[in-house]
Length: 171
Image 1 (cartoon, rainbow, N blue to C red):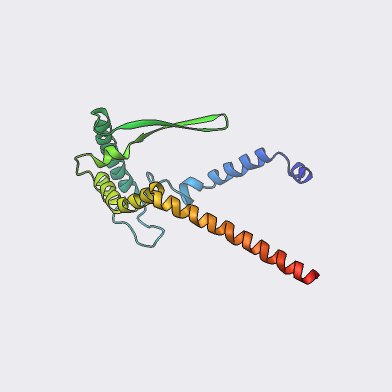
Image 2 (spheres, rainbow, N blue to C red):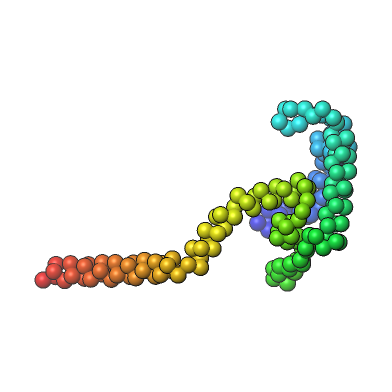
């Protein structure tokens, strides 16, 4: 592998040169134009948009900005509760801020994401209750233990049967 790479030269330089050539040949001006610059209306699924992509992007950006402001106001007033959560992977610690689901569910609002969240919770809550019931129910725990004993009994019975069988053959 080292010989192959050494014959090719410095991989970093080759990669840099290749990417620069792609950009110079129009990677972001002909082939993959960013939405905010595209004046096209064609899409990947062959259904054209009515407005050019750059106009749609600007509308999306405006709505996103308004929604961020609404959410920030809800967090600032305490209607949406946030929590810092950290995940450690080796020496790297990633900290993120999350909005607590309970505060979304209890929010008195007609915002689309709140209504959609409440709908999802209402549909999934029955399964969550079932999982909690199974996890915490003594009967289920006892039944699980009974099945374990049954499996132990079966494995011991098989061992005795095979031991008896080999003993008869040996006679």
